[in-house]
Length: 379
Length: 91
Image 1: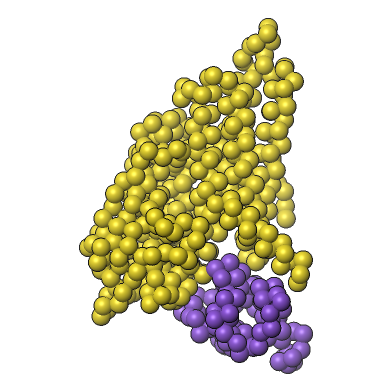
Image 2: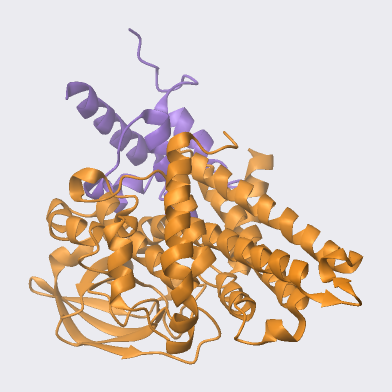
């Protein structure tokens, strides 16, 4: 594993950094307050190819590696976790279409998704099925050439504006993944608001009431909805969330370093007080450690090494906790100002907390990491 | 050119069994035993297995390969790998 970005990867870093600072960050506060992402910013992400980051160029994607995807997600996550969440769920759907989609599904969806002309969202969570994904209660019942869906999906990121949903259901008791268009008869989309963080991620509840889709909407094989489709999509999602957490950490650190240098108390900058320096030291160290874990996970993904599942769990587990600790310390450095929406660090803290829950809660990551560890030692 | 025998260390069956052994520790499992019935294949194991097969045997699994019967037993997995390997050599 290399620890430095190659010149080509560094060019992606500079490009995404420029977009993050110049275009995305200035809008992040308004997105948080307004609870929505303006379409022109989604179009901007599409224009630079970030909605099709992993997709090959021949289908209209950017053809980035996972290491480069991590770089992009760190940069976007540094500016706005809501926008970064769009990249995550959209890339999970696109990755699934490219990896497990039929020829017909690839022909229909790969290019519009890769170009950002259509948006995808991931429909797994339900009112009664969160961490226990195998307990989804949404059913798919065969009716001739069609399937009839009944059930409810909740907390669907960018569900409000997605054009196609990757929905998980039970068919004859076996899990299936389906591509369901927003226009499917019997699908009702209801916005969800009042969330703690990533308030611009336009969550929705999807209600399927005798919702009819063609049987060819099934992705991959019957029985593999959770086992291969959801797990591989969540693996990509976890990696992007982990990288986004490095962005939250870096943004919190940057804000704290600047504030500590300019804020004076007791006749000198607070950066000269040892206890503030201790906070800054821990922030610097933790951000660097999380970035290295993400780099390792990205490298093992690019090598298609099976160890990438473990590497990604470890990166997501550490980076999301790091983001909460570092954002919390950033609020502490800022004092009362840090508790005000006039400064971005309170948003970083609210957004960071969400990262400990999405794409597999940290308790699920702990279970998986321990399971991997036990398997390694016993094999 | 020699082909690994069914029981050699390099045989697909041995490699698949060694890999899956991490998931069915403390359990005996025959090559024709149903791993879904024994709940050995969970979501992580399935993804891990797909990555292992692709990396170890230099094949690419696609949507047509995602059938329960291809993953039900060690023997079925090995048969799928051999079909994929032969078709990639023939291509």
